[in-house]
Length: 392
Image (cartoon, rainbow, N blue to C red; front, side, top):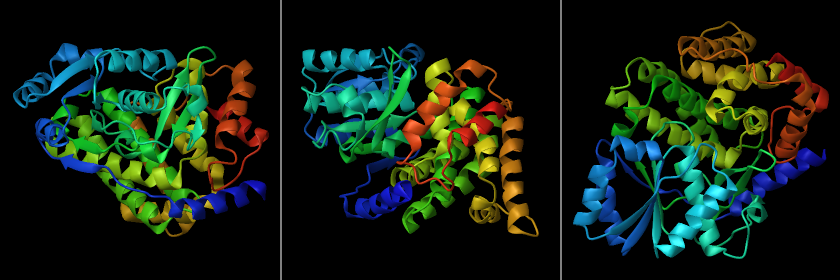
């Protein structure tokens, strides 16, 4: 009763919050439109947060040239690792201050964008540590201009109010969430995702699907969040395997970027659920890629929810023409569809890294993250979590 009351009240209260959406720059070649916008916004120097791999591949040379043409100075911070740590963020903060930057362009996957968000938060809240920002609405101050350029169609971080940080001391992952973390601009350029390896295409796409499905089946979601979630599920299931099979298909890549964006909008307002809670716990302990963890955990958790989500899964199934005589059959066929896609993309059915001795710790971390914050379809206790994790 406490959990449900908490979730219900928060779902009503958040409707009063000043929600906004990032301004979109999208389509083939849209990255090169960004310097003009940065100039219009009056910035003279920006920090480009990205990964070393992107710099080595030379993927951003045209962006650098265009920034120079527009008279904008830039400093490149490319030390972001998967699952950004507090140390990585603090290193970037020092660089931002040392170089006298006025805004941030984040080019990369979820780790890069999450790092950039928290760097911005530390800039405007210099007396607050990253760990002090964990949780909801701990920043409450406008960030320096933040332009996000996703290079994977997965995290939706370009439109969310959250960033996931890893504490390297105890390998714990936690979220920093505040409305001010939503970027000013999101640049959706399919050209940047063409070179994405098949495996990364698979697990980032399944990450986006997990966002959309969990947002749709959660309780107390708004009509708007459900519409975005439904649209995202349909687009992902129609395009993900095509992107996996032919990464050079720009139309399909563009659809996946939009779907990831819509999924981000949906779960920002309706939250995620136990799939993410378990995935964060396992990812933190064993350094399993977040998308991989979600891919494997999603169908197992959906099956464990049982009858509580048959109606919602049947609706998602109908959107992609999944047949069945009853809600139960449609729901089960929808889960089967997820398993078939995973198999097609060579995603395993289990996470063999999970050790039995660590299960109590995984359960503890998952419960701490999810309850009471996530309005999941069914509230689980330790025994429910144990059954699911043992299946993994």
